[in-house]
Structure formats: C-alpha cells, structure tokens
Length: 281
Image 1 (tube, rainbow, N blue to C red):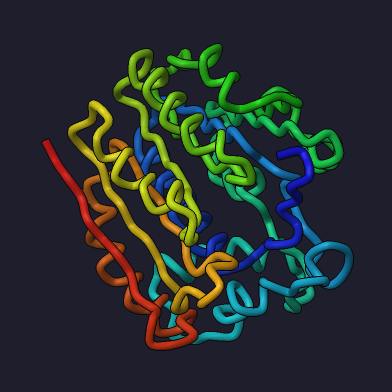
Image 2 (cartoon, one colour):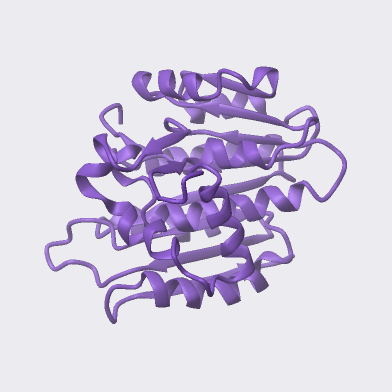
C-alpha cells in the first residue's frame, strides 16, 4: 500500500463520482445547525498539480474532470462540483485538482471538524503543508485510517460522515473495509459511511458490493459508474462505485438525474453504464 500515489489518478472518472457524492453528503449534513465531523480514512495529499509530476504522466483527468470542464449543460449538482474545482483554478485553466480533504474542508462551517488520515509519509507531509493554515478545525495524522476509526467513533457531536476509500492495492484492503465498517457500526450506527471501490476484473472487487449489503444495516444506497467494457486481459479499472450507509433520503432522486448524464459524457464505448439501487428500513 505504501507505494500507491493517488496523484497518478487525480481527477479521473472515479474521482468525479466520489467527489461529487462527497459534496452532496456534506451539504446534507450542513442543513442542520448542529456540528458534524468528516473523517477521511485515506486522505492522500489533498491537492494535485495536473500539468506536472505524477498526474501529467497518465493524464487520467482528461477523461474525467476534463470532460466536464467546458460543459455548459451540467445538471445543478454536477455544476456545484465543477465550481468547487474551478475555485482551485483562478485563471480558468484546469491546472489543479482538489482531493477529498480540500473538498470536505470547503463544506465545513466554523463548528464542524475534519479528521484526516494518510499512511504514506510523503503524501501525509504534503497534506499537512496544504492545510497548515486551518488550525484546530482540521486534524491530520500519519496513520492507518482503518485503525483510527476505532478511536474516533462515536464522534462528540454524534453526527459524522466517514469516507473510506483505500487504494485496494493489496488484498487486505477488501476485508479491512468490512471489518472497519462492522466495528464502526457497532460504535456509531447512525453515522453516514461512504465506501468507494474500484471496478476491476479481480474477484475481491466484484464481491465487495454484495458483502457490504450483508452488513447489519437497513438503509443503504449503491451507485456505480462503468465507463468502458472491461479489457480482454483483465487489466485496469473500468469503473468505480460508492456504497453509502445511512444516505440522505434525497440522494437517490439526484442520482437518477446525474448518472445517465455521466454515462453520456464519460462513457467511452457501448459497455458504459451505471448501477443505482437502494434499501430503506
């Protein structure tokens, strides 16, 4: 896991889905005056340069945020997300991409808190530099986010969004997600948990949504975006998904509008499509 650098993939189709949803979830929490926390278990560096370094090697952003950047027909919820990215690019050219920590921080009010965890020492150092002026509102720890959840749940305000998005670079990440959620729900059953996962040929990835549905939960939403037909050799990510426990009741309706649009704009071949399903108590 320590070799993984999210900068290679910053702004790709998976980031579009994950970060659009992160904004929707944090906005919903902000509708009440009472404070909330956002806990990001695998935070990365927080902000990425797209025209140099790792991101410039693969240029995955060109088939993700780059496809939305010049669109004038964005649905309102997607326009909100793109506007957040524009705030990082004051000269109107797409040069920087905000990671989940930056986007989460932009949703906070003075009474809210952000707790960030990143195990990779280099990314953790960059993350701390990027948030050096945010004081006590933002806490950054170089640690495994799975372990950190045990110490933080339940959070003092009893309202929180927990974003779980490991790199899935090792097979351990898949059972670790299930174990962390099982423990987290036993401590804080009313929290909102958002789990990102990649669509890959490997069996672990294909089985994860089913395992998440079998957790002791009553309210969940599962959304996945497939951007192209899986490659014949089984290599690479052809899409991604988010599994949300205790989602906002309005989210399913929003996604009914957004997902067909994302398939149209980000889809690369006839294999593009989406999944949208939910369960309610």
